[in-house]
Image 1 (cartoon, rainbow, N blue to C red):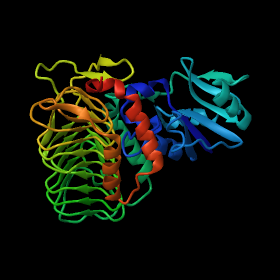
Image 2 (cartoon, rainbow, N blue to C red):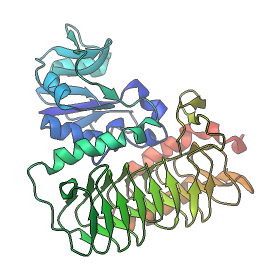
Image 3 (cartoon, helix red, strand yellow):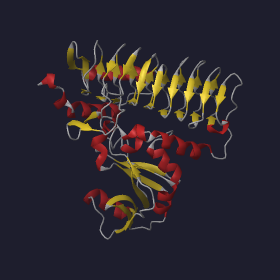
Image 4 (cartoon, helix red, strand yellow):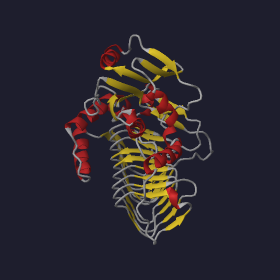
Length: 402
């Protein structure tokens, strides 16, 4: 089945994470949304996304296509309803498009005219659960169910790699799954509250303590003595140490040293300096507000626990202190004493104590080239074009440039 995932209207509310990727490349649980749809619909997915992202994340069109809202989390009932669609039929929820089965001509009309003539709408049965992402703080709230669902999807009928006797397992052993190539000795894992999944060729160093539900992607290193509380999802290629709770690292990011990361979402290629801490709870225990790029204001989250949101390639120096509910933009590089402001624009360099300047685009690209080479990945011309678009479009937030 050819699946085409489109960004919903919530896309701008999910910046800066969606500044560099389609919505369906966000990670909820073990898998990204795209990976979930591919496995559950048994197909291959491409994207309808922002024009500046489309070359890196292209559309693949076939004679018959399932067009699906990429911000929705799939479930078995929903996938059955989508699978039952005939060509020319669309599944709707309160009038909004969930999915449609289109032939090539109908799809071209959708792209060119943003509508399809003679499309028959079918309202989704109210008994079928529908979960979709609308705001940044929802990502961590959905992680527990995401890990649980993905664990069943990925491990059903399969055998885990054997667990060394040097590790201590508390809780059901069937809630622990190690892919091939995992190295783990002298660790403590508690699966009582949820499953623990460890991806291929990952090393969990001695003394680490994991309390499920926890997902760790492939080729990741968990440093000695790490304390990871669930629900936490760590994508592939990361380096993680210290204390982490209820957080998401999309991929290839480093939080390798002591310090606290809680109720946070880090994009790709981020680096957290040693002894950095983020607050995830206000001193008055009140609801947290979070910066929203779409409304250009701090929005009420209705949540007590909201930590740090960090866009791709953002970095912070040692002993950095982040306030409750802080949003850090793409390629921001921050450091210095004292708490930082709650919104740090894209391509900002500096800190509240010494002021900010703009991270020069050429310098940012040079750093990204070095950083990505450490994981044997290239910083491509496509990447550069995407980041230049972000650089250009976010100038309004860098007040020191005016």
